[in-house]
Image (cartoon, helix red, strand yellow):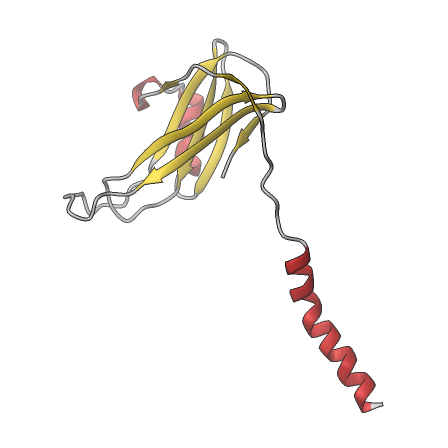
Length: 139
């Protein structure tokens, strides 16, 4: 009887580990079907509604889209950072069968770079031609 209970306890103790290993998240693959022209938008040119949304979310990493009358905006932020000197690069932005795909990368300050010691909230806003499509933020 004790042996049976011991095996049951061991089973339930190991069950979450087995589920975590068996249910790993897969990265979706998207096949590029075309290029997308875009512009990186300066803060002064971001629509007010979008800027308000960014300011409400910027303390944490975020990904958002905003469809305006004339354009589609994509925004991605990397949350609170301990200093200045960060930038964001667009690594990929393309059209796929499933929609628009965007991949960005946070670039930290160089080791010898003089930066402000104030907390910063780096983000990027990209402007595309107006289209109603799904947007996929790639990791």
